[in-house]
Image (cartoon, rainbow, N blue to C red):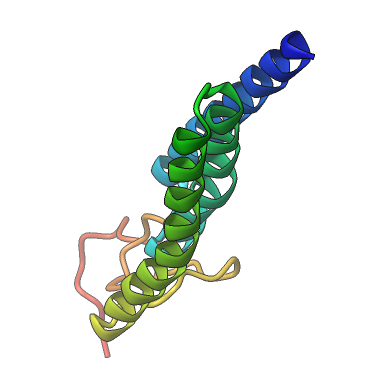
Amino acid sequence: MEPIVNAASWLLILLGSFFIVVGAIGIVRMPDVFARMHAASVVDTTGLGFLVVGLMLQSDSILVALKLFFILLLFFYVSPVVSHALAQAALSANIEPRLADDRRNDGAHASTPDGGKSKSPEKP
């Protein structure tokens, strides 16, 4: 039974590490604050969840496993609260989410209709 538990714990640890790496890449690649917060929350719930459960299976002591379980519960409670506070702070700083059909911030200058290619000022 011990080799099965050992293999399952390492599988969970590797799976959690995979989700953490993918989430970190997602945080760097996402276009705005709200999409980055979504990627970070995926890292929180899946990556850390799998990693801590794998560590709980790997531990020899029931006390260590219980401490890891309480850490996981605390983290699952605190993470949504922190994400909500960050979203509220971003909204109160007038940061708007970028929509899929929003072309305002794709490198074109808003001051000229041709995207900043002409050097002449805009005429009213």
